[in-house]
Length: 554
Image 1 (cartoon, one colour):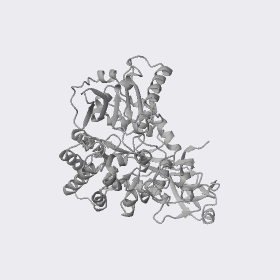
Image 2 (tube, one colour):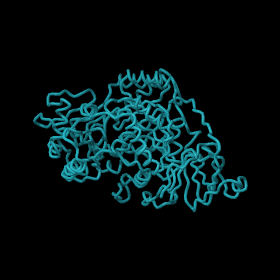
Image 3 (tube, one colour):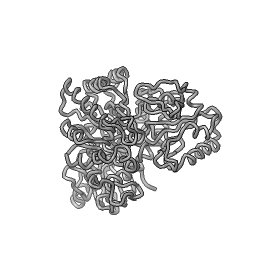
Image 4 (cartoon, one colour):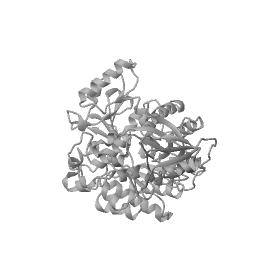
């Protein structure tokens, strides 16, 4: 990402506030705790001893924390905010425990909302792992919901969809339709369509769904951001450009900027720009990166690339075949030459690059592409990143350190993935999966993320899974691969100062220190002193963005 920092302009006229009678987790380099914090306008004026600050600022408005804990606002390392906002309008399949329940949920949605025939019905979040039938849904299952509505349900990973007959027909998909590059149209043993579409094949369906206007996008974002604020988030690194079939990045950036101009944007947005075609990337660089429209609220960049799929959908690109599907290694979305060209083009424009890579095969391609780009324009502080990094063989771990690549960790994914990892990769490769603690011990720079709406947006769900290495129910007792448990402090650094580092903003936010932005949260209790099994019980009681309260628990 471009390293020229935006100016921070104080609007003035703010009353100084002195937060006291609580615990201040500064998240500074020394990990210090303090008793009081002075804030004026959008900046932190001082952090330190309560008595000393009370004497220094005798006229400041006193804010009694009543023993509660203050820490920097959470920085979400990788999320799909607009997709999450859109998902709130769809059928939520995540809680469903069977395909029969999914069918009934679809019928109920149509019945209660009186959806006219011919109108699209969408759902998201299904996971066959948790279905009683232990299989993927099919066209026949969705036809049981309705044959008078085009229906598409997206898997929890967002890398696979299932469509009914009407939707397939509208998209012109038949059993003779060829796979698009980087995608798969699944067939059964008889050569008939199953209704499952993987990776780029999803867009054959998505392109048929009506797009949203800028105003519709804005209202969806305001709703989703209000939820995010209630969870303590103050910055989101978000991938939004291909949420809708038009893939109109101008519309997305316009929506965010108009919300900022209207003073309705209560979240700092760092757009991870999904631009997988070289022509679109060059166009974006010309209009956005070279012009630099960045503000303290909205920034464009880095380039985001999806280089493989998901482990659950068996589309993550592995070096060796899947243990439970030995005929496939998954899907590499790009050839090596395509990936190298995209990464180098962005790097030469000082745009920055982060890549979704789950399999070891995909990560190897990314690391090679980063090296190629550095040969063209050496930059010791490029801050390339890899998102998800689930199948990390020892040589891949070593390259994170050697190449100074940021690891965008996602511990919360283990809530579901710990149930399938061994079946997908086998016992021999299992020790080389989800090696978060190993990366921390190697002093690799890392951030924390949720990939929402794939997994929970709540940072305390992430803390619970990352610290305990178990699912939400507490399974397995003692933790899954417990040697990879993270400490609460490691998790919090990933969600704060390290998240700021990822966007070259570690001197502006991410810790509670003099002169930094007053982005912070007030918590019901101190997560560093909490029973690890009760981390999900911690409540966000107030969220402050630039000195302004954007959420207060009622």
